[in-house]
Length: 353
Image (cartoon, rainbow, N blue to C red; front, side, top):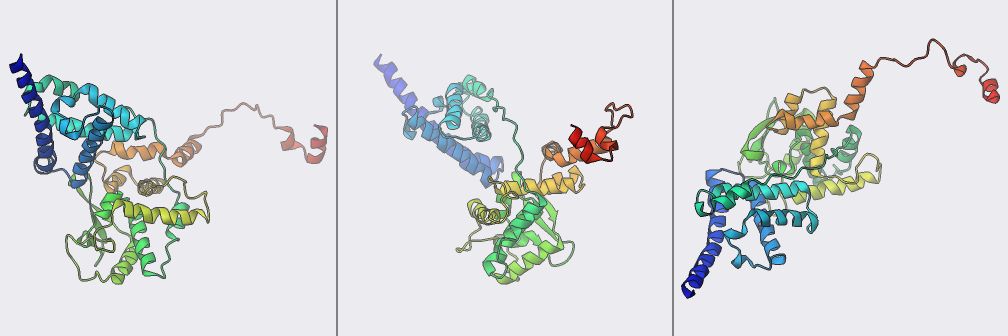
């Protein structure tokens, strides 16, 4: 009996050590080197496990030192995903992102710890939760114009903020993609003007720049003496410490001017606005201008046109115009006109009612 208890303790301690060891290797070796995933994706996976550790401490009363691979089972993960929705007020999308991190770790560990193959297969059977249909949040063309009119271009900081917001809109870039831009990403010395954007999966795309946008960028570059810099690591937009702007920093700039624009016309600026709303706005405006979905897909960096197709489905204006063009009047009137169409004495007709 004592031998059994001693063996159980040794196995339990090894289980805890294995969790820490393999999670460290997963995040520091497997994801960056074998999968070649971007730092942003690795950070998102790391956050999933940080949140899981918090869950285990709060709900299961287990400190990080006592968490083992045996705790990564289907039942626990299901409770964890429901907990972050109900207690942490996370969205279903966030829950699905967290699940993706655990599924990736499971696919990695199943070839190492084959003694728990049944546990890993059960975990891999989990599927993402179905998300409720979301309405795209975007600004009209007038809304974008109002927003971009807010920075004071008489000041250096105002010209910098205009360069950030206008490039965010004109390229349709994700906020992290904009933050990751470097000086060498721009090709604005001569036409055709372009910017190289590195998106999800480290995939690059070339996005054309309009002359008006280039004019704004060149003014910003002159203000900050960036003309002679062509360094692949020098960020295009940086903070006071010459470090690249964070997503939070860019969002703060956007929300500051959005709040300012609402005081002028609150109907043009939605109450809930994010940097992704600007990306949605660009896509919708391109679609409404008649740009082919394939080109919009390439500009936004979508891997599939099905992703881009959400803009076509959401475009109420395009649907209305298509219906108006195809409309056939089938309502029965038998050539009979209403009284108000034939009565020249409208006043008399009204009194007779």
